[in-house]
Length: 166
View 1 (cartoon, rainbow, N blue to C red):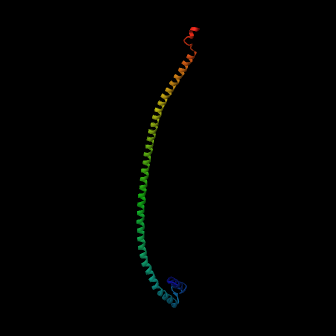
View 2 (tube, rainbow, N blue to C red):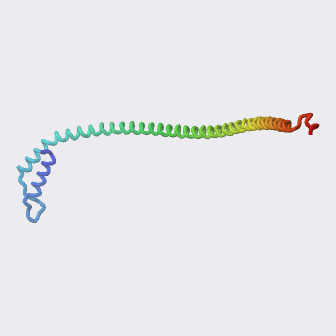
View 3 (cartoon, one colour):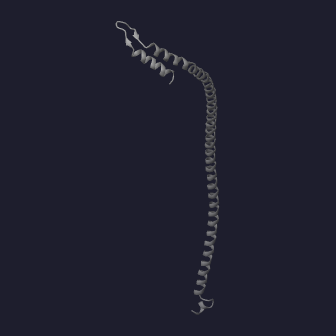
């Protein structure tokens, strides 16, 4: 039993005591009350010592908790700075990547136009050379046809003495 149980027992003894008529007083067994009070007194030094120990520990626990809380807050603030810093670095990296990508897209488009222009110029030169070649081929074929026509005429034409015979 602890002090509280004994005090509860003492309170019950007084509450259940026989009341004096026409008075707020009651009749209690003196021996019982004194025995309970002695038991409470004997428990109090032990309980008070425990209470003092708990109070002393409480101050230490509260002080340790305050130190721990300050460390947690400092760590959280440092982490928050790192996170914000990393976020800013990330945002800067994304912005730089976007700028590089846009520049690369512009460069690729410029190179594509230059390549198309180069290929178009080469094809135009090839077209001119091909046209000249086709023209030369056509003239050559025309000459061959002209000779054949001449040869055909020569085959049909009378030989120099033939006109006389006729």
